[in-house]
Image (cartoon, rainbow over all chains, first blue to last red; front, side, top):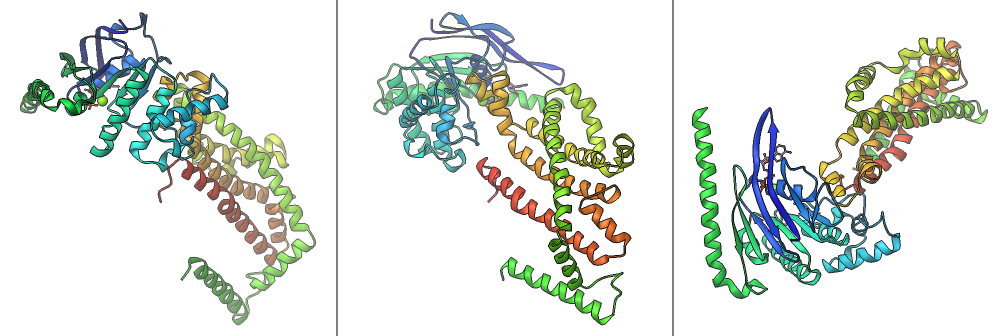
Length: 261
Length: 252
Ligand SMILES: Nc1ncnc2c1ncn2[C@@H]1O[C@H](COP(=O)(O)OP(=O)(O)OP(=O)(O)O)[C@@H](O)[C@H]1O
Ligand SMILES: [Mg+2]
C-alpha cells in the first residue's frame, strides 16, 4: 500500500480537559489516487492532514508512506494550506524556488520554478510580490511551490475555501489537469460536497465528536465529471444524508450543553 | 493648500513673531536672542568649523554606541524570544530598565569608566539596546506560525529555518526597533555630553551656556533638532516604508 493510516487516534488537552479529536482512523490510499476528506467543521480534517504532513504527532497509531513510518515532515509530502502561506519578502518566483534552493543551484531552481508556475498558468507573474496578486493566484503559487519539491503525496487542506465560486471552479480544472499530468497522489480536505464529487476517485466522509470515518465512497466515473451529472446526484444525496445526521448530532449535543449550564 | 506650503508659512510667521517680539519688547540677548543672532551664531560656528568638529565628535560616539546597541539588541532579542527562562528572568529586568531614562546611569558610568567618552557611549548603548531588544523579541514572537509550518513541510528546520524564515519574517519589527534605537541613542548622547565632557554638540551647548552665549545655545538646540528630524525622515522612515511595502504590510 502506498499510504496507510493505521488505528490513528489524536486527542488534545485544553485547560486540563482531554478531548478525543480523531478516533481510530483507518485509511489506505493507492498510488495515483485522488482522495477527498469531507466532513463537518471541527471533525478533525486539518488535524488528520497535519499528522500526515508530520507537523503534528498522533496520540496513538501510525502512518506509513511507501512502507516507511512517518516521523516528521519530509520532502516526499507537499502541503497546501487554506491560506497561501507565501513569504511576503520573496517574489512569486522566489517563493516557488524556496523548497529547491537547499539542494540545487539558483539557476536550476529558477528554471524549475518557471516550469511549475507555467503549470498553474502564472508565467506572467514571476517577479510580482505575493501581495500584488489575487487570492486565487496566491493559492496557485502555493500549489506550484508544493509541486516544485516533486512530492509523491500532495496534501491540500481546503485550498480553495476562501475563494469565490468562479475562481474555485477554474482552480478545480487546474488541479485536475495537474493530477492527470503528474499522476500525483492527492489527499484533499474540503467541506464542499460538489468539490469532492468533481475531483475525487474516493471520498472519505467523516463524522464528528470524535472524528471518525463514516463511509468511503468510490466514484468510478470518467473525467471531467461534468459528463455524469445525473449519476453523481445519487452520491450527493447520499453524502448529504450522512452529514445531516452528523450535524444534527452536533446541534443536539450543543443544546444539551446549553441546557445543563 | 499643500501641507508643505502651510508649513513654510507657519515657520516664516513663527520666526517673524519671534524677531518682532524681541525687537518690540527689547528682550535681553541673555534671555532670548533674536533669530537673526541665532542664525549668525550658527553661521559662525560652521565657518570657523567649531560646530563641524562637534558634529564629527558626536556622530562618532553615536555610531559606535548605536552599532554596539543594534548587535547587542539583536542577540538579546533572539535570546528572549527563543528561551522562555531567559524571557521570564532577564526579560523582566529589561522591561523594568525601559522605564529608567538611560541618563540616570551617568554617575555610575563615570565611576566605572572615568569622565570620558566611554561613559557617554555606555549611556548611548544602554538607551538604544533596550528598545532594539524589545522590538526584535516581539518580531520573532509574532512570526506567523503558518510560515513556520509551511517551511517545515519544505524540509527547513533548525538554523536554516531560523535564518531563512524567522529572521526575514521579523524584519519589519527590527527596522522599527532600529528607528527607535536611533531616537533613543540621539537623546541619550546629547544628555550624556551635556553632563560630561567634550568635544561634542551637547558639551558645546553647556560651554556656551556657562558663558551666557544664548545665541549659540539656541543654535545648537536647532542643530540637534534638525539632525534628529532629518535622520528620522530621510533615512529611517523611508527604510521603514519600503520594508512595510515589500512585506505587504503597508496600509494604503
Ligand atoms: N492545537 C490544538 N490544540 C487543541 N485543540 C485543537 C488543536 N487543533 C485542533 N484542535 C481541536 O481539534 C478539533 C478539530 O480541529 P480541526 O482543525 O482538525 O477541524 P477541521 O475538521 O479541520 O475543521 P474545519 O473544517 O473548520 O477546518 C477542534 O475541536 C479543535 O478545537
Ligand atoms: Mg480545517
